[in-house]
Image 1 (cartoon, rainbow, N blue to C red):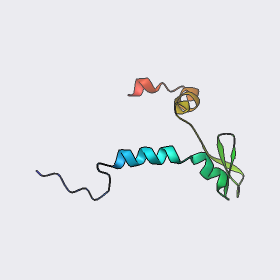
Image 2 (tube, rainbow, N blue to C red):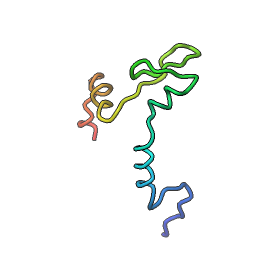
Image 3 (tube, rainbow, N blue to C red):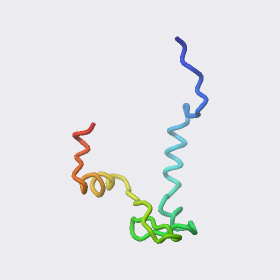
Image 4 (spheres, rainbow, N blue to C red):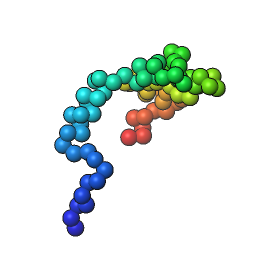
Length: 78
């Protein structure tokens, strides 16, 4: 059976374009410049409710500061 035509995007340049986007974009800056959200350290705060709505994790800090802190050994899951 023939493979269906890709209508969702992607292709030969996806990885190259994605890597360039990652090098030139900083999520922390986007939140810092947004009028509805502010940052307290790595925590994203909704200024309308003054509640935490998210946390920023850079690189391997996701494993150390989120998973390991909650007793999850990701190496056992893969």
